[in-house]
Image: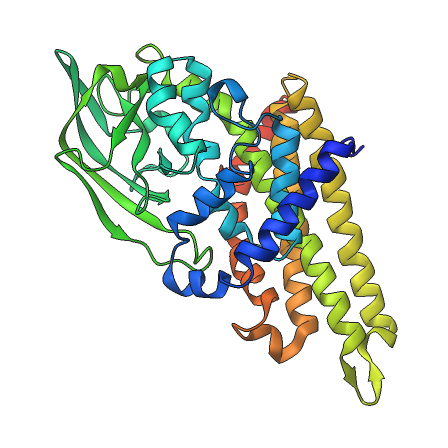
Amino acid sequence: MTIVDTPERRQLRELTRAFVTKEVLPYLDDWERAGEVPRSLHETAAKIGLLGVGFAESVGGSGGDLLDSILVTEEVIRSGGSSGLIAALFTHGIALPHMVASRDDGLIDRYVRPTLAGTMIGALAITEPDGGSDVAGIRTCARRDGDHYVVNGSKTYITSGVRSDFVTTAVCTDFPGSGALSLLVIEKGTPGFTVGRRLEKLGWHCSDTAELSFVDVRVPVTNRIGPEDTGFLAIMQQFATERLSLATQAYATAQRCVELATRWCRDRSTFGRPLASRQLVRHRLAEMHTRAEAARAYVHDVAERVAAGEPVVTEVAMAKNVAVAACDFVVDAALQLHGGFGYLRDAEVERHYRDARILGIGGGTTEIMNEIIAKGMGL
């Protein structure tokens, strides 16, 4: 099964493709070297309605659902963008949903609407230096002091942490590691909140990543998302969307690399013959195409079930692993088919090769997904 095609979704694809062609492709290499995308890109994407896809108009979004968000992600990458660009431009996809779900008008007006309008940038801070995937073991603590919380701790690997105006932050509201978590919106510039350093990475070069530090940071209680100690459930409820986004980035990257490799093999000749004329090359391209398309079909099937409200935690984990495995195979094969040129920064396939490596780590590692799958099997 694949996501139902409609005239509106065809228009959404065309809009996304035009945006990438005009506003991204001429500048992406420069952003890769600068280590971030400009804030103006958020405003441009918001003006044409792309930034708000998947968010209701009642909170400042453009409407649509999870499936429409998946189509935008897919088309950005298929049009020559990258998963790193998705991480940089659409970080609000993981920073805002908890606020929207809480139906807190104050938080929605202060943070959700401006972010979807492109005038603010939000980030999500969960991972800690010694925590990894252990969300329940979070040690950054928030102590209640009257109408404020006093926050102490640190976070790392925070996407858009350098540029963000606010950070949706997971904190422990009991003793460290107790699993009693809450979510607080902490604004940049609050005394005691500092960006430690910009982290340099293997891939996702245009997406800034930071370490964050909190020392006696006073956060108003009104910046808490939902009731106290409900943060763990809120985080878990949003994991399906994040994992499907990463799965989409994986299969779309694979599809794009199939296209790049096919074009290269048709145009490139060795020993007087096009590469594509050789059976070994044709069969390799066929296998790449098959894996990419199979991953796309399965991710779409699971996404439709999630959008319909089905509790498919195991299937989401399988979809992510299937897509990541397909991507890993395809990007490696695509770069190999490009030969020496594929190893150069001038080659688009080189960027996808680097960017793909994080997809089996972010949003829960492949190993964590396997553990979820095993539990779903009753093991």
